[in-house]
Image (tube, rainbow, N blue to C red):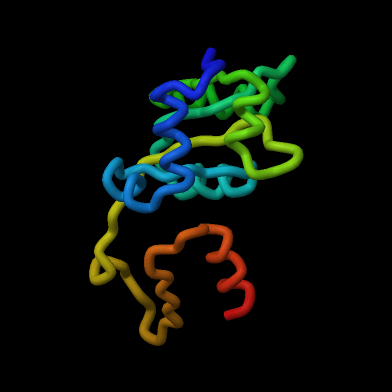
Length: 134
């Protein structure tokens, strides 16, 4: 269990806060159950499953961990986990995942596509806002 801001914690924090580190390491930080579920549906390779020190995980979280055995499970103290998460009530898990680079020209488009390109977002939450208003 991680109880201090050690090297692993610093890597996770840098993935959350630093675009350059995300690009260099080829990983992203995903917070929020719905975002994690969407990443899972997209076939993303998870590298870490991070939990806070809490009494018990839900059946969904246990199943998620079981389904992603290649990911390292990182347990951290509750105060450190709350510091990592942006929310007042953090979700029971957050994850890091591999970035799969895809060349725009490899994407199969319909004959009359509507394309929205979001270049280097600083906050992935902005992406949802733009999609809803597009």
